[in-house]
Length: 109
Length: 112
Image 1 (tube, each protein chain N blue to C red):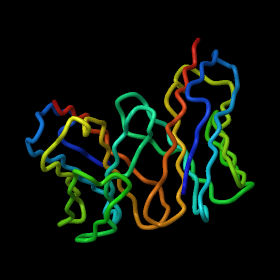
Image 2: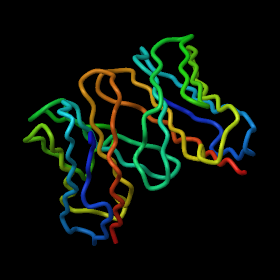
Image 3: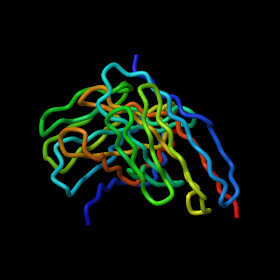
Image 4: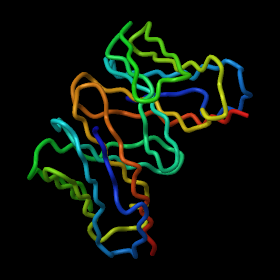
């Protein structure tokens, strides 16, 4: 059964303190792994798509990497505005995404 | 502006009273879907549609209905809501394939 597990559930960082979020997955035939950001009361906002092991993508202070079993979202020198819930999802088939429960990130000044 | 809209954004209702949550997208996307989001469970797909008149069940379809008569609209229907359908609902759309999926702003539903 396709499954996505994100850790930690919650993470508190000081401004400038770099860290990583983990997304472990099991899927038969990975077609894509997706990272989203979700602010309270809003819909998820797309960040990255990764298609194959070894692929990396960057956007501002965020960098996503992918292996055959997991993906990491690295946050470098975070700012308070990076506070949000980060969601990971995988697609093993054409029709649907399987989402993890998310990691709630709080960055304090 | 490219967007997915949902209405209403907030809804309080009572058990058994039929309701419809509307979803509309202006990006000419073929694929649309409905999710519910519950604490600790993440986003779970309710129904999806590959195109007009083509819908199929997701992971948690019980108690819900959908229709896709026009490409831009994909309403979610709760024929007889129950308290366990209290949740945050999101509509999403994307072109065919694995392109970026765009989410609506969400509808927070409370069933008493």
